[in-house]
Image (cartoon, rainbow, N blue to C red):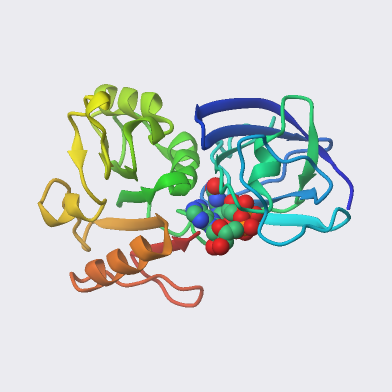
Length: 259
Ligand SMILES: Cc1cc2nc3c(=O)[nH]c(=O)nc-3n(C[C@H](O)[C@H](O)[C@H](O)COP(=O)(O)OP(=O)(O)OC[C@H]3O[C@@H](n4cnc5c(N)ncnc54)[C@H](O)[C@@H]3O)c2cc1C
């Protein structure tokens, strides 16, 4: 394996969250909105200062590879964008967080995954539910497929611990205010008094339980992405209300991606 791509932009959302734009030496891999790519660095790559000690002793010659959802539009071919959370004791994210523009890394040549809107009929509304960086695939779907004021409604429910963890908030608020067919419902689980947060407080599931957002299996496709616990809990909740899980071999209107 050789480093075959470079960081062209790094935006810090919070100390534990960044948006990274990666440009491969060759052409940008084609992908369906919602798919993921693989990023890798060798064990010898430095770890970000603020990360904790590694679990176990890392082998400096071993390449560390992980899957990351693509957040950029599939309609632009200049770079791939990723929304990354620092796992302080992790192997790869502390090394990705140490990268600065111009630094090099490995980007897998192909995007993969079935968590896409390609088989969803064009007239169905999308209810996109994510925790943390589980928002990333939806940003790609929105940037690639949402048409402001035209076509089906996209509803985004994003859960985070604090309001400063709500990545892409400005972009999503602008769509919410400017497009009749876009709804953005952020919710935070642990707001601190200094945040002065006036929005929803609680888990993403609560906005469905209290009726803030309604989903109807006859008209809507629901997507769940992020923590395995959230995905499992809401999968059961939506199945109990008439949604059918999409699998590689069966059609369904409930799509699940676990990080
Ligand atoms: C299809 C897919 C798409 C993904 N997309 C993204 C994405 O867009 N952005 C993103 O940041 N991650 C994403 N992930 C997760 C990513 O692949 C890594 O698992 C994550 O970045 C941790 O890697 P690491 O090497 O730093 O930690 P590891 O060394 O793999 O993990 C160290 C420890 O931390 C735990 N851990 C792993 N992830 C988390 C977490 N998020 N929070 C708390 N503890 C954790 C592990 O269980 C382990 O015990 C995705 C995963 C999958 C399967």
